[in-house]
Image 1 (cartoon, rainbow, N blue to C red):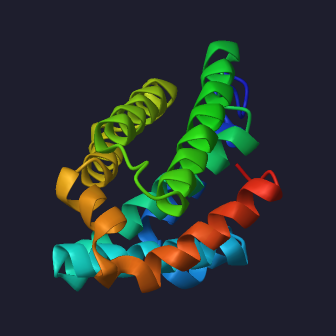
Image 2 (cartoon, rainbow, N blue to C red):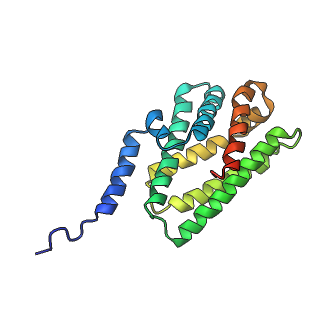
Image 3 (cartoon, rainbow, N blue to C red):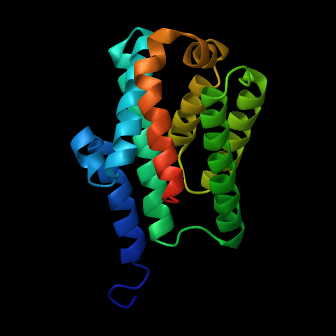
Length: 189
């Protein structure tokens, strides 16, 4: 007869419960308890860009929901020491790559005639590949598919061109650029 509690992993159960709850309650209100104000503004303005680009609130909501779920799930896994040494090295590479991507995005937006769609697409894809490697053993195929959808959306040539060349997006992108600068100054990513 097994000892009471033998084989029971309360920490693992707690982690699964957190991830499951996140999946059920990924509203903006819940997300804002995990996401700071500046990041929240970036996400809100990103939603406006997506809504304008997709011409669909439903599609914009879906992309934003997937971003929020992925960020919070990663945070939960990181906080609960779920990543092995190799994955932690990849997390650091991802942070550096994403920071570099954000700096490039800001630079391309602020400096006329520097926008290079192919360069951005290549770097977005490299971030996607790193993130997929990090979550490989921790996530379901559904979650991996959501991550792919988000990165593929931001790799769309028409979206990138619109952000950098269409004045319609300026009221949304200007505050994103400002807030990205703040986040980088504060070493938030």
